[in-house]
Amino acid sequence: MPDVLANTTIDYRKGDIDEATYRRRMEERLLYRVRPKEKADEEGHFRVMYPASGSSPLARCEQKPASVNMRSRGKLRMHPSMDTKANPPKSCTQQSVTLPPDVHIKYRQELAYQGETWQAMYSTLRNGIEGMNGFLKDGSFEALDDPERRRLRGIAGQTVLVAFLVFAANLRKIRSFLDKRAATVTRKVKSRPRRRRTDPIGKWRPHAPSVDPRSQSPPAGAAG
Image (cartoon, rainbow, N blue to C red; front, side, top):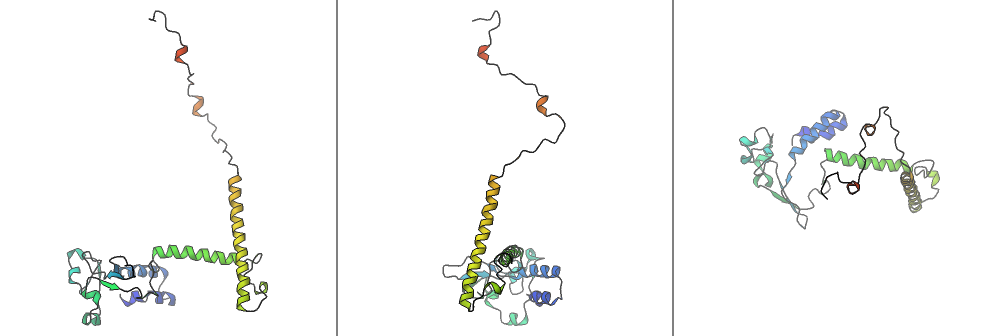
């Protein structure tokens, strides 16, 4: 991956690029990821492929001659360094490689960092956490961030008091939810008044009286 993409987050935090450029570069980085070939086995080992590997490569690379053809024109072009060309790793000499479960386990995650799915999940969870933090710090109730409410020394004592405050906040949130649900169930639904001033179609449609055919007498001259 080019350095300009590898250093995207660093450049964004330094203020060298704007947010639009940052998002665009993060999307470009996804093209350089290895592709899973199959699911992990029961021991956690899994096989992955280089983007230019396989019968349907997603990129072109000189290290993978089969990926350079007419069908791959216009796709991402890999530029291996001189050191990679001189000492190609297994991903360049094999179609796939097996990775043990402990490889980069600290940085492994199911969702691509800063991707659309990651953004949706991260923003939702973070908003929920920040909302709960504000709920706990409400000065009219638990005031978790006010040390005057926890006049006890020691980590153990502070932990017990914080646990009680969180417990009280949870009860308050549950009670609020139950009150809102009860109000919704008992609320009577009122029919909306008719806004139109014109007559409904029922006034103009003729009313057909229901007549029991058995009560009608046969016409004169009819055979019995």
